[in-house]
Image (cartoon, rainbow, N blue to C red; front, side, top):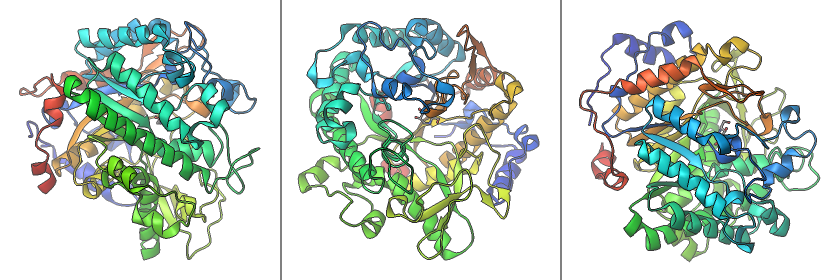
Length: 537
Ligand code: NOJ
């Protein structure tokens, strides 16, 4: 499997150094990391990721309808600096330039999402917008003609506002049917060329932000989590996830029964996956870190692998945790071909069952002492020492070892199911203007996270690909344009794209192929690779 090896003692030294609980990543060591593409297996897909709402703009053009985020952006105070994504990066008009950029980087694959309101402006209540189909056809065809594999997310946070207005979006089981309809249109229209599908991006994060903290549309929450005009933070996130999981499972069933034999693709789900480490050596904090993983990751993955919610959640939740009927458990079980993890950061976890937890810093989440949070308080400091360097996002601390740990967690809990790192990237600390172009910190971040990913693979994890978040500075949801994750800088006035230093680094990294590198040409044979050997490793 391995064509390349870590040979440098510097890397080993670095890995040991970073494995100690209190280590803070030092740029001087990161500079020495010698991670190469050839350190990854044959056929491993390297790519960049984006999402429709964050880059497309053209929000009312060619038949697209208003989506939930368009409406949310109009509410004063919901987005930093009053930003909106009406224009975003204008990718709708500049997609050819962006595809050329991807090509010039030398990526194998491009992960992007389909705008629901561009393809089905009224969901199931109206027809297909052919202009939307045409737009994604152009993207897919141009990617393929440049040898770039489309890796498509069907639903990445945005949906037609009409579905919210009619029945409350993901709080209603009706949304499952709408999602299935949307997915079927995608399979019918694009499935002859798309071999990698992700049903839903980060159901765990959406439900937390939209229905618990109220910082994403439809902005539902209740005290102590936040002050919203409506919502129930203890219950609604569970209902929304329940509907997303069933929508996912029913969609996968349809894909496998009606499309897969002809289209030969694979399908998975993408989760938001922070790593959690115990705040202290105390057994209770160790259990809290395990609970944090169960309440965030296993919440989504246990149902789609094993057919039901994790026992840890059953233990602490009462009747508010919805139940799956037996026929639902059957369709949920094994409803993914791969796991997609979006991994950026690690936090400390502290027990709130036996100790009191008061939220008194800027990054803790209110309500840690509630079942919905698993009775876990998350923190970024241990005895005043930060877990890692801060970034442009309040809770995203740089902890490269977390990449190996999270992959190891998924490997163990899900019997080494094939996995893609569907997102990983760095946002420059706000106002550090020099970092907007000369983004050495981003390069160091990427190198060190990749080194730990390679280590996880060496330990036997069946990881099939890695997508860098993100191609260009974009609309970072509630943070608007104040947070920059891109390896291309986007000028907000001209929307011109300029490569940052990290873009050149990524291009060089990607061109450094091992002598035995083989281009992946067929997703299905790749995914059908016998994983039983890997599972027994
Ligand atoms: C994950 C989300 O999928 C993406 O949309 C977002 O921009 C990144 N996290 C960074 O926050």
